[in-house]
Length: 261
Image (cartoon, rainbow, N blue to C red):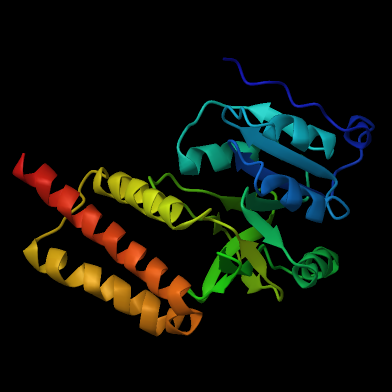
């Protein structure tokens, strides 16, 4: 299927450079994406959603909120997000969000202030916190991701999983918090971790051995549960720490199985 053409807003047609373009990648994201778009509507000049085939009403909901929806068959995590960034060409700033990330008011105000402040800062980090089963969890705390950058300064290098924005130039950290509603329930969390494990194991040159197989999964549990302080999140922190350890175990088992073949 050919990618849909972007419908350019009237102010862009008139030659006015958009100040901020917020971009998303999505597929079947009705659970969270409309709330995320609604939170940035007053801040953004353009909102672009790169959709890879939603059938749950995501496309209509995004358009109803004023977002431009562009179809793009799935290219992989890094390339799909780079496609979204490329579509923001002509804007002064780009704000990249996952479809399950929702900024709080303090973060939105910090983004607004960052765009108004002079200086040579090219990108800004935000603090992200996982939300699971009705509350925040410290499963991967501190979790800082680079989300806001000047157009042309940021890009996403190709990698299978855990893609990151790389910015040429100095960066800074913004106050506020981004709520990351990554998992629907425990089963969804486990399914996602196993999928990431399969992707990580498929990377050419991935290595493992018996020592890593025995040590890395318990270490993953210890890091998430103790070092990240998920021990204070009750059963939610304990169960998610187990999920992270199982994902690590799966990755090393798959790498070793591939090596034996």
